[in-house]
Amino acid sequence: MGRAEIKLFQRDAESVAEFLRPRLTGDKKVKIITHTDADGISAAAIIARCLYFYDVPFNVHFSRPKKTEEIAKLAEEDYDLFIFLDQGSGQVEAIHKFILAKNKDVVIIDHHPGNLPKHPNLVYLNPHTCGLNGAKDVSASGGAYLVAERLDLRFRHLVGLALIGAIGDRQEFFSGFTEVNDLIAKRAIDLEIVRQGEGLRLIGRSMTPVFESLHKSTRPFIVGISRDPSACRILLKELGISQTITISEFHPEDEKNLADAIFSRVGSIAEREEFRHALWGTVYTNTSDQIIGPRDLREYATILDACANFKKADVALAMATGDETFVKEAMELLNLRQDEMIKSVGWLVKRLDLLKDAGNFRYIYCGDEIDPSLIGESISLLIESGTVEMDKPLLGLVDTPTEEVKISGRGTPRLAMEGVDIGGGLNAASAEVGGFGGGHDVAAAARIPADKMNEFLNKLNEFFARKKDGL
Ligand SMILES: [Mn+2]
Image 1 (cartoon, rainbow, N blue to C red):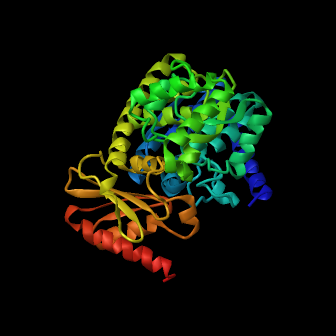
Image 2: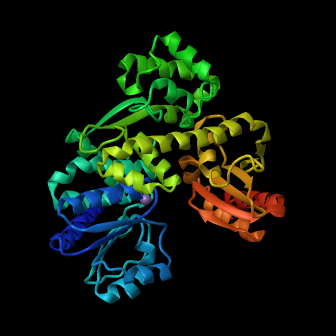
Image 3: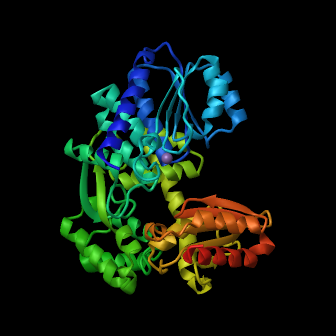
């Protein structure tokens, strides 16, 4: 991978811009269909801001990728142009059958794989058709941004949103961004629209007093600090740091001192790279006043996701399109989300006595202590807390109200490189006990009948053992 693939992707972005230009005259009505997460919201915000600029009437709809019958219904709506963001590649057949067949226009900006046949009324931008990796090299927001930039260089101040979407989709790695994301980040930094630095990566660094950031910290959950207000107070007092300023207002020396104090307080946890990188590393700061809300890009992505989690993606979109009146509500939703997550991950960290080693993976059965909708993220946060060794996959299991057990599995990029495929494992083992599941090599989920838990764990252990032996 490299220059040639990135060039192809940029050429495709130009084709989408060319397709859009004559359709942005204001007499065509546009429907945007996008995903309910930070990437989908950021991508929609970028395109929405272009449409505002050109006075094009439009409507934004948030949903999971649509089923065939839903696309048939969508085609009945009174719009001339349908823009699918962060989805659409997997629905091309239905899009052809129902929307293109009605002589309507379609744009797909997506980073999920799919079979994309050509049609005169369809253009798409997708890293998979350019030899790039859609899971890590670019998100839907990155694609949307490149299209916007080609429409008019004045949209360049939106570049922060491209990176917010990538961060939301966890496309930022210990070593930084890759390929198209890397190109976008470098350009944003060169143009001084985004500033890159090193610092504490705690959520809230640009908007919340440090005391709040610390005692509500889930990324990472800091043993002995998170959920312990008096420990936070003492720590800040010892360092002579005011509780009420934000981390971004710190003297650079204080920021380093606070990090060192935390590292020394957590003892051997400080040696776990998941914890180290979660606490300290690259931070990106938006400097353009065209994007309102938090300046820190990770914080921004977390807020968008928090809104989406409470089914308030419209609040997130309003903020991301520049409506100041929604910032407060978005921040409140972030607060609620953090309360929820810190309760779950706090419980996990406290009950590590329940953690069991199955041989080829570790697991923790939580009964009904953690909500099934939160277990996946909770396990990710448990890993970032540095309290579990990650030389093998980690699974969280919870009871559901429907007499099932939900399983969320998480690995690390290193395990994936060694060939550990959690999605494949959960898929195979759940199928063998009458359940279902799947996902990616580093993150996956499954559901099984409640009485089949032990059988499932044995099957999964065998699956990983077979893979290890190269069978
Ligand atoms: Mn995405």
